[in-house]
Length: 452
Ligand SMILES: Cc1ncc(COP(=O)(O)O)c(C=O)c1O
Picture 1 (cartoon, protein in one colour):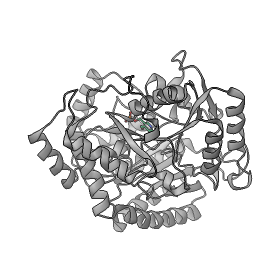
Picture 2 (cartoon, helix red, strand yellow):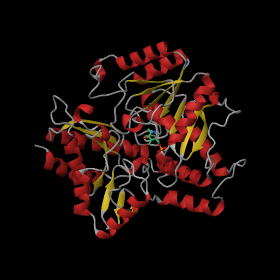
Picture 3 (tube, rainbow, N blue to C red):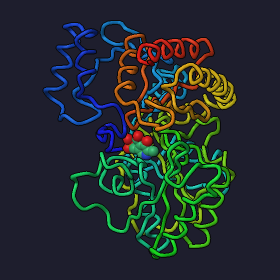
Picture 4 (tube, rainbow, N blue to C red):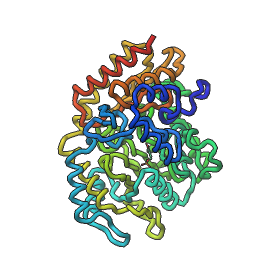
């Protein structure tokens, strides 16, 4: 990665670049500039955020609208927008709840949060029947790590290079992106990183013919490191969308069982429908010991995340493992329940698979047309379009990717860039076929501008 000098672009597009400056110059009016300046004045500056690109005024369905009235299809949405922005069914549920019980003080519970816990236990397979809620998935990951220590009496964790589990110190310790941990000093002790799945550039060789060497290596680490309490990984990464090869999760499940290690899957960005199933692990025929969900759980309205654990892991009565102020938020619960109900009543899982396979075919056609596209990977309505200067050397086409992103923004399509050269596309699951066509048309035009 460093070879190509884009190490700062690991998680997303960077917010200080000549392309960004030019885009603002060409597209932003004086009124918006005034607000951007104020944002930069009062917010701590940080990568991937302030200084910001533009100022939003509203959002609805698959669209954002900025202060200048520009409408943008949002294929990014931080993955909170499965049911579309400002979904009326969810908003209605939140409004009703606000009038009855907006907050639940500690020592008390409330009916909405109990109903949500029951609903999650219902939709999660096996004995994944116990939950704790938190305002963000970073905190839910922290709860999972603590529970694993208590349940196993072991403190070590094995996680994946390149992974992301949140931005707190414990989460960046198990995360595998240097952009978050570099310069931060000592992290959590006892974390071992191993190789993640990489369908396109794995140093072990091609995914489907290497005989799961990365899992063999994980087994080696579990054996040699000893004292490992948990393995944590994202079922499918929301950034570069690497798809587990056949047998991958079965073997990991077996390894964990053999070594008495708990398997924690982080599905913050991909659960509740994104992959065409409520939980992505359902594609792979295994059940983890714990799963972390978040983002879209709050319907794109309320910050909500959850740890769902097997009931056998209800062993921490004497510890405060998830002591969060909004732990039993009735408003968050109303948003989450309405979100899940909407996904079910609108058959969004089936719709996602249908739209997903249509979009995949359209993206594959783009790959046939442009040599700049090295690879297209996807599951449900989550895609990675990996851009390379040369299909043989696979040199990442970083500048080209950034140019394409700004061109698409100008034409009305927003998405995330991962690793500097990957276009990550995750549209709302309510998207219609003609909207996918429009987005592909925009992408097609923008790629044509830079493909030589
Ligand atoms: C896989 C994964 N885990 C954890 C997090 C952290 O979530 P939050 O920002 O809600 O704390 C994210 C956020 O992007 C994520 O994608």
